Length: 421
Image 1 (cartoon, one colour):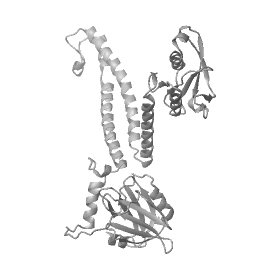
Image 2 (spheres, one colour):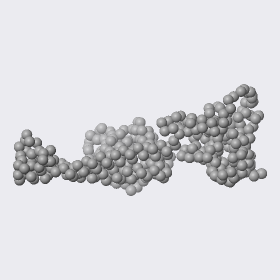
Image 3 (cartoon, helix red, strand yellow):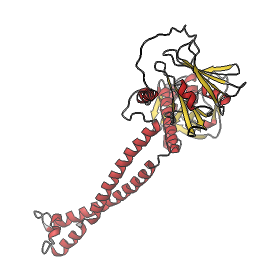
Image 4 (cartoon, rainbow, N blue to C red):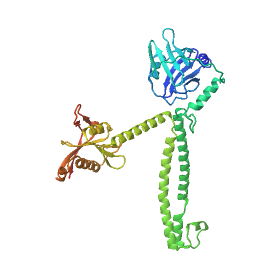
């Protein structure tokens, strides 16, 4: 493999460094021997390390910034490949060198199971993928082994390692982006079938002649009824009952036609959306999913020991039980959430978690204010009745007082309302 890399990457220029959770990919542009990009991939699996040279980068959608990649980006990018060699004194350790004389970057790849590492060095500065451990003395083992070609080794690695942490999946070696495309294609196919079915229903609603049959029965009764209209008539019922039934069916078909047209419009919009399989759309959707999962995680974290009041769809109020609870509740809130507190009076903090574009009705704020008063004051205080001023502020306008252990805050842009007990 080392000899093959030396041949294929002779004087190739390092154009891009990509790091993932699985390892590192160095993308070289080869100026000779069919000029093109070549990707030197290092799989840093602790048990099954491997490196290979590929024409396509299979980890293009797994990008995750790693310190080693940043180091190489600063010191090795745009440098020319010099050579690679095996350090036979250490065993399965390969050295790769890039750059000109006096400005060389060395990459040491330790392809030793359970001692895997990738160490980059430049001008006495170095960085490693894993903490560096001293290698034990190398003891060569001489044994006869089946000779496997480089193509066979690479194909075997692709089959076993390209997937979720190298396990075989139903979709083989598909990347997350490719899986996302296939999922959208399946959804798109379902939506198209649903569109055809709804259009067929609409055509049926619009071609049925319930209204015409009803008008005919009103004027002529069952006499001279067209043969094709016999399917609309129940001959066991009277003319008046059939007239009533026809007009009821005609009215229902009209309502269903409106619903079918609305559904068709919605399906067209969904099909247009699913047809967009651009990388930009994938990144936006992935970012939104991560954001939603973060919000759910925060909600679960907050909900653990706090009092809770549900306000309906996507809106929940939480109340602390101590000063630390109050501060944690405020710090875990979003800027658009609503902070509620008694005005000029010590009380617990309440925070309403809601969607960013969601508007809360005054009745919902009043219910949270009443809940805050009833839960935050003693029974003797609430039993005496009276009116209490409550403030509601977006969390973006609430700031904890630095160093204050009682959980006090400053705020502005507040709404005030009275709670009568």
